Image (cartoon, rainbow, N blue to C red; front, side):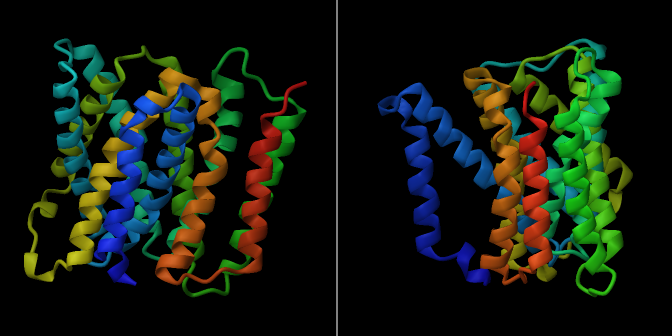
Length: 315
């Protein structure tokens, strides 16, 4: 399975798609937005697979630290190319610390530790609960964003999907309840981060992304100084390449695409990713890593995505 990362045909496919995205001059704005949305779904959907391969040679703490470090260098470079500079006052950096911990270090670590005992596809599936948790938090912390019957029904469906996952894991050695709970905690952390993002001042997307990743990488290396020590002989090529790709694409490049879509098409259009990222993650795990597909996982996927769809209904 590892050869899929190294074969010339794989690189040719990625390169061709990247060229198509970058050459947007021949596309109208609507086509461009859908193309970027597809690219974002593929990048974020593949992150769980890349974490799985990185964990072959790196500890969860190392996966977190190095993906943040690589991502911060990429974002600084992108910000520099766009003539952006980091804030000179203290307040933005205090906000960046909140986003770094709740939106990066904590969920990254929980997902990586969770994937030590559950499959990459299941991790991606569980993360789909995040927008439904956000609905509940928004009811209490965001004015004029109260629960309605559709949001409640959607949340109940989503929780039902989680129950369908949790039940069989009690007798499955490859998918432990603890791993499931860790990934669910990561989803909740992302939801809390989303609420904070609506309550704190807004910043330039490139500046904020760069600042948050810089702070997150510094904190991770301060709390886990041992991750500096690597035995290069023990690192497989596939793990090294996976963590490099994880830092460049899902951690950094995806942020640029994310804000590009928000600015061009709006947050409602972007919300379509919530339906498809778990699908991509789930089936990539099956196709690339040979992870098993069980009927209860498919039912859980259907319930969670249905919950997201129904929660967006309007009166």
